[in-house]
Each structure stands twice: as structure tokens, then as C-alpha cells.
Amino acid sequence: MKIVIAGGGTAGWMAASLLQHAWKDKHISIDLVESPSIGIIGVGEGSTPSLKRFFEKLEIPESEWMPACNATHKVSIQFNGWSPKAAFNTYAHPFISQLDAFTERRFYVNCYTRRLGLDVETRPEKFLINGWLAAQRKSPITPPNFPFEIEYGYHFDSALLGQFLAKRAKSLGVNHIQGDIASVAQNEQGEIKSLHLESGEEIRGDFFIDCTGFESLLLQQALNVEFESFADNLFNDAAVAIPSEALNPLENQTQATALSHGWAWQIPLTNRTGNGYVYSSRYISADKAEQELRQHLGLLDSDTPAKHLKMKVGQVSEHWAKNCLGLGLAQGFIEPLEATALHLVQTSIEEFIDAFSQGNFSAKHRAGYNQKIRVNFDAVRNYIVAHYKLNSRDDSDYWKDNRNNSAISDSLKALLHVWYNKGDLAKEIKRQNLHSHFGNASWHCLLAGYGVFPNLAPNQPGTGDLYKDYDLKRYFSGCMLNFNTIV
Image 1: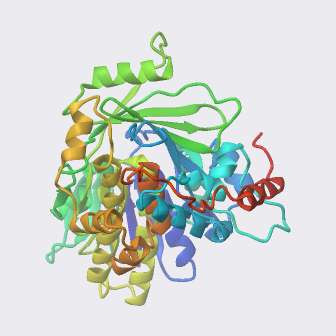
Image 2: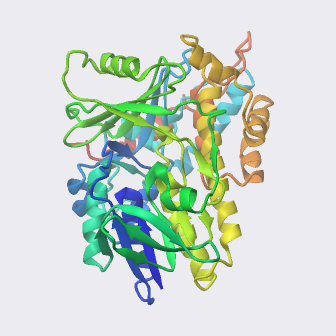
Image 3: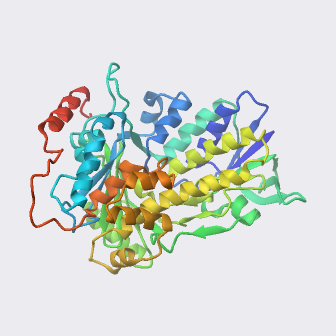
């Protein structure tokens, strides 16, 4: 069997790497066709902890790939200014680690106590180990005798990561073909038969993977798979990116700061800092967005060029159609607020490998696969929409319209209903089978971080605030002795 991947970049080379690893003992060859004329965006990008699993599966040590991609460790995302009416204007969403088993319940108990109107500590970063690592700029790498697993992701240069994976995949037998796709040929059943390059070369295959970006030359254009927009409840459709000097000292968390018509990211790399502004073009022009970002960064007088990007937010109706799989921007995109882009690519590939293998390399499990990936996208979409729906900013129509937008899913409505009515959020998450993406801890981080609580009761009895318990502070102070400061 011959698999042809159309398009490179991080998605294409990640797919080539995982397919080659999974089927290296099968009679399967992999061609990757990449256009030499299409540049890669190459902005600083963040990941979830799933990327750590990706490198572990491929047996690629951090000492090999991280320096090549100017990468740093990431333990948390800090949100600034999203809910100014909350008790605190900044909160963090730390990655959940094994060590949190000892303190996570205290976080939930305090959140429930605050939902009853009592004044207790509910900042997520005070209860979760990665919140403390971020605050004290500690590395998540533990000594060999440390008995618990610490979860973390990465910040990296996305263009360099694609190049690193390309070099490795080619060394392991993936055939790299450079050329621009002129047309896509189909057989009588409507399946893709071959790619015709502008050079005149024909690339035949049995199965095709579309990594051609928003254009989606194979899945959406050739096979006419419908794209379903999320514009009704995710307004942002553009971004502007401007790099700046590397942070000194380095940080180990992403910053997401609310601006007038969207939010700005800050991603610390070893050689520079990745910055950008994700916004809605319905509310602000590209020029004004760039000016606002420059002002936010203190770079109004800088001649550093900006990159302007357009985003097509949504997902395809079928991620696997006929003999073609869409990946990356070709299958859909949800803005990078929680760094889920590569997570969705990786899980889509892994699920495809399982489904294709179990079906004896046939389309037997295609329907089940499509349903599963659509659920993945919807789960991420709901969590991102909640960031906008629950905001308490009044400085622009953009934020007000997001808050007043009634176009939210039944799933999100049910979650908010349970929270507002003091119900069991974990039980609702389990009922909806959402725990594999953003689970109980993540939803508590968001809702508590936004201060989604009733007014405080007029009389405040002794609450038994578990955070104020000296043992919890001593516990985290003791844990910090096992971690080194970032250098």
C-alpha cells in the first residue's frame, strides 16, 4: 500500500512520523509531496502535554529536538484581564499532574464552598503543582528518584519543528517529493487516484492525507467535503504576529492577555519571544490590530515587521472521506487559546492509525472515526467558547457581544446549568464523556478563574478554608525542593 501525504509543515511531518513508526513492519510506503513555493508561518507555538507523549513514542529525547527548535518547557497558561469583575484579574490554567491527586479535591471543595456564598480561596494555581512551578519559575524536570509524573507541554518554533521532523522522517525512509500540485485525479468511484504536479510528474497512491492548509486541495476541493464554520460563536478570524527579544529570565508558561477586540499571546522561546494578537476583523481592522499589539508590546517605534494571518475557524463535515484523511488546517481549526491545534492533529492521526489497522487497512471504521474526531473538535470548541461567553469586560462591543451571544451548544449550556445550580460538575462531565479533553480540573480552573460565583453571603462564618490550612502551604513548599529554577 502507498500512502501519499499532500503538504508538509508540522501536521504533514507529524503524520509521516507516526505512520512510519506504527507501520514500519508493514508493506506500506509513504510519499510526502511538499510545495517549495509555499512558506511556513513559523510563529512561536505552544502545546499541551500530548506532545510529550508524541516524542516519547518516537523515542526522541528532549536533548535532541528542543535545542533544534528553540523550545522551552510549558507548565501552564496564564490569563490576564479576561474577567475584571472577578476577585482577581489574573488566573492560571496549569496542566494537571499526578502529584495533584493530593490537593485537587481541596480545590473542588473550596470551589463548591464559594458557590455557596462563602469567602474562600479559589485561585487554581494555588492548588495545583504546575501553578507553583510557574510562579516560582521552576523547571518541571524532576530528579530520577522523584516518585510522581509531572505533566508539561512545550513552547517551540513551529517552522523549525517541521524541519526537524522532516529530516528525521526522511532518514527513516519517508520519500520527500518537492513540487506544486496542479490537479487531483479521481477514479470512477470518486476516490483520489493521483496528484499531478506542475512539473508534469504524477504521484499515484492508495490512500491520501490532505495537509494543504486552509485551501484543502484534496478533501474540500477535490472531494467537495463541506466545511462547517464556527463563526456563530467564535468570532476571531485573524491574527497579527510580531517577535521580540527573548525574555530574561525565561518563563515556563504562556501568557494570554485580553485586548480590546481579542487577546494577545506571549510564548517564550530560547532565542526570542513569540507575540501575537488574535482578533475579529468584524470589530477591528488589521492596521489597528497591529498598532494595538505594538502598543501592548512597547514596540510602537520598532521596525520589526509583522505577519498578518487569516483564520478559517470550524471543521469539515467528514475528516475521513473516501480514501482521503484531512489533517491540520485542512480538517479544521480552532483558535490557539488553549494550544489545542497540534493536540487535535496528533489525536486525529493516532485514532486513524487505530481505526485503519483494526479495519485491515479498509474504510470499515470510517464512520466511527469521523464521529469521534467531530466530538473531539466540539469538546475543544465548547471550552474555548466558554472563555468568551463568561467574560466580564465592558470596554468594547466585541466583548459585550461575546458575552450576550446565545449561540452556544447544548453541551455547554448543561455544564453551566450544573455549575450555577451548585450541581456535581464531575458527574455532568462524565455523563457527556468529556473527561478525555478538558476534564473536571480544567473546567474548575476556568469557572473559578473567571469568578463565576454568586455574591458573597452577608454573614461569613468560619469556612474551614482548606487552602488556608498551614499543611497545604508546607506541602507545596516541600515539593519545590525537588525542582530546579529555569536557567
